[in-house]
Image 1 (cartoon, rainbow, N blue to C red):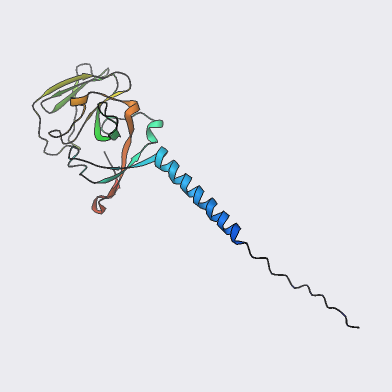
Image 2 (cartoon, rainbow, N blue to C red):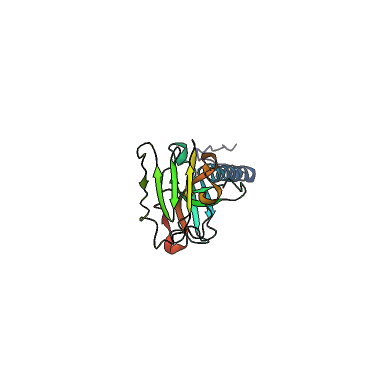
Length: 194
């Protein structure tokens, strides 16, 4: 009578089924999609510049990433470049620079900006030399008193810009976010430094 021999050799693990692999693939794809969706709609938004209103700092067809989260923690500040929906056309997006803050009065006089606020009741001339180069100065006068949550915005290329001189103040609720990163063209890639 023969004797059976028992071995303690490890048995090979059963291969994971195709169904398990497909389930894992679906889980990873779903997680990735939700992550991208959250980032895209709640934190950062892509934006293409249209028009010449912000030249020479932003040109037509430049690709920007807009930071949508910062303004949940602090208020927009003077000099920041923002993307917003203009009050006269809520379907479009504009890109402009914040010039006047809530509660201030802004006077635009032949290209010069004078800001009146509680710290400067007699007004001060806004120094725009860091971002304005060879500025054409439109011969016009606009005076606007800003209410709570209202901002006065101007394009850097004042001669061709449709901005608060035309459509008035921009309400805080209309601001999408601030220009944060330039992704295109390659020779101008980098963080936007207002």
